[in-house]
Length: 213
Image (tube, one colour):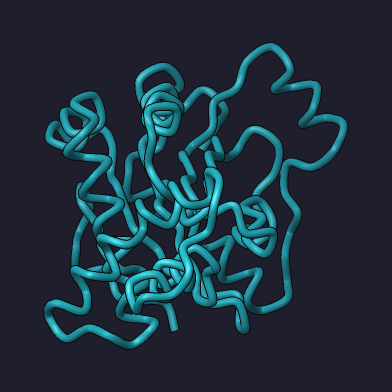
């Protein structure tokens, strides 16, 4: 793939997951992280994916997917909660930068999900704007529990699924691009202990993509 070639959604997904596999194996290539790359992309950017993930310091996108400068358009919020600014940033990535892939990246041991679970159980709700984050995650906790999905990994999967659905519900730009095959939206769950990103949900590419082991 050259700088002027936009990959298809599946190609972009495979490229991302190949980088994660290198990271898991402890054999990263650290691509696109030198002075030459810096000079090449200085006039304009053309990332191959929008990465919308949790702000957790352990989820440094370019590291865990072994990518470099100009490869990923990264948008991050605590608990990957969605607001107007988030939607605008993602729409910029797909409509202006023509990214063929949008990834929602959640992870285990997420503080926002833990706080939402505690709040749902009658515990203390944080103050300030942290409260807003918790309140936006709480519907995922309640939805998971309503169908008997009470384990932490099940609640996480529910939140990732609901986030991907919310993006498509609220963004006509993104929904239209998925419908016509120009963009895929994939939800991934990241495991902190082994560094793997496992597929939870996918729209716009084969939904039968197996989870990474």
